[in-house]
Image 1 (tube, protein in one colour):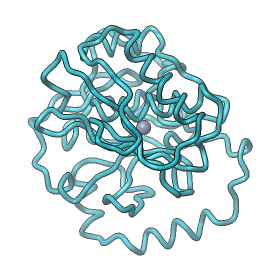
Image 2 (image 1 turned 90 degrees about the vertical axis):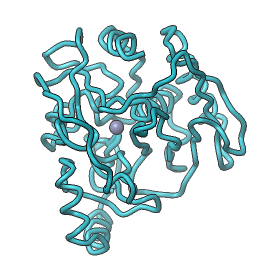
Image 3 (image 1 turned 60 degrees about the vertical axis):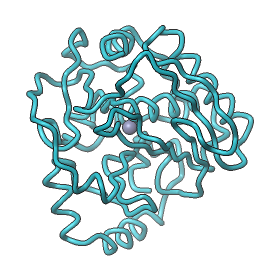
Image 4 (image 1 turned 45 degrees about the vertical axis):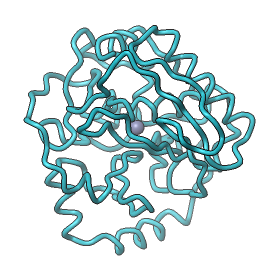
Length: 265
Ligand SMILES: [Zn+2]
């Protein structure tokens, strides 16, 4: 639960997450072998607060590394350019124009359902080569939002495959499904952003939105971080792909987000 990243809440004052933190972290750390830590490090990800989850390992607060992705050979390295900008992974969703359905699994709340629809509407308003459609409630979508029981994070997802498909799953913690519509929509849009290849806008210095933390790494190795042309070199406080948020956060796409989306898709 440590930073409640990831989208992690940095403003601890807003939440009373207290004494269990340390125990959770220590317990989790014991479950992860040094070999795995080394592999995560080789991929270039931060090894701080790596968490063992059902699908594999959670790094950077909301990025899932499966055993397969740990063993994947990185694509050819690219150069990163500046600091707080928009970044995409080496792999992107291909085959555009393309429709991506978003299904759900679990007994989701009306608020979470509305949040998914709001996130879909935000993407579709940009007239991208990706069109998002709401799928059913028994999974099966291109991306499935799965309600899970966890206090370790708010939501999580991963990056596109080397075959050009979106990451297929967004895990969403039951604890956060009745937060404000703006919050839920922002979290879903953020996780879908990862699924289609966006990294954190502040991945080079996550303390920008989280208050603590540094470079998440992996700019030239592993999944990669390629600067998206036309996005700014200065801090971008409103971006939906910032690593952390608070309970009152709502981040519809800002002008730079729109540039980044239009550039990639
Ligand atoms: Zn994220």
